[in-house]
Image (cartoon, rainbow, N blue to C red):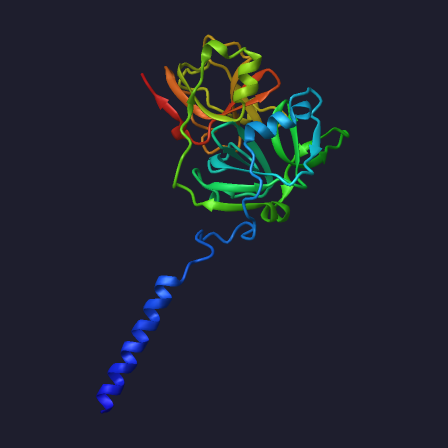
Length: 284
């Protein structure tokens, strides 16, 4: 009789557990502790639409900015972060319609937003602007000379305004091939600035096997070094590397290469930001 009771009890437990397993849904399928899990997709617009709506402040020459007061959101995949030390306090997102730099006062962003991470951003209360006509999202900053522009938001503010939808590696935005014939075209730079792109079959002007990407002796006020490419005017295109980049001391390739990176702009000049040394493909 006792054996029958134990069997019935065991069956009841199994049935109860089975019901829980089939009905239970994890309300937070993403395991990352970062971000605002309470955010819901409510009024998502494309990055292209966002930049179009704020074109007057993003693309003028005065580094202007404006607070976003509408209840709107964007979402996209991370295409660039600080893993190689060449992108500082920023991540780059792309939704297929365009790309945008997001400025965050925090290091190690790659640890929870690796390439391929899909994120949702609640825009209300953040600022959009253009630094050198490169569209950026963040908060206002004034330097010691009194110049103001959109810059890094606090990590606390950022944590409240974003949500991870898919963790890194689930999907990756493929780089777009850069059209060298349009590198001086104003419309082309406006439509594509910030995108992950690949420029093929180019050679560094100082690729002598000795000159490195970013030695301290050549750095500018922003601790970066510009390197030109053969056949392209330096006033319109450079590869820009921070002296803090992991590959800053690497010698420039001596022959033709394919370069992948985040193709940002400073006014009419393309500034290619290589993410890691793996973004350079040797073709000679």
